[in-house]
Image (cartoon, rainbow, N blue to C red; front, side, top):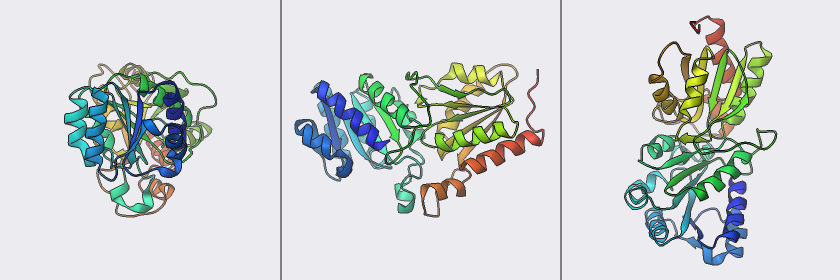
Length: 314
């Protein structure tokens, strides 16, 4: 995802001299081609994320389209006041990019785990929140964020990443992307955890549990229309996110379901159970430890269905 972001932004910078990239003294291995090709459209603000954000807001108010870049919580939580007061309040064209959502930097400990960022960023008025699920969604999300007027947040995974989609996608801010159709269960996923959700959906179908899969590269604005429609069609909706279940993607879906009239699907959330990770390890190890691996997703959903706990009334 990170490589896809840099490649896409480099293409945009070639076409638009107002595109600026500001890094918080990170990412040099992947940003090298960008800064060597467009040195006048690149700034290293140093390990000073508050200054980086204030600088970006100032440039944006002078007509630039500014992407700030760092890892984990550093471009969001560390400079939240500046994002709120300098960028969002003025609807400035500042695009905050965080690489390493969830447990991507798992071995570095909880200070580098981004597990509250979606909840915090989506609480800021007029700030859109994009969390693409694979490299194909990432390319489309970067282009859409560039075209969006105002402040936005782009949450990425780490490294090259893999494609879950088999071909072109119909990407639109505020719209979910159907991947699999199912009549019994619907899995809603946001972010790079889509790879685990996809494996789980395929296995559930093989087990005879008809399961649909929907990727939500946009958490805010959320696709309320699709959520409400699917809630009338299936027995169970499960959200999967590499994030705290409180206030994040699952919370956004719950807000929509709370306002849905009539009979609707039972709802469950899979994510970090309102805690900080007390262990370190690879992203795969932490996902499994906290119930987000494909294996754990399959177990939870199949147990709910087989137990008869989930029954959709007609």
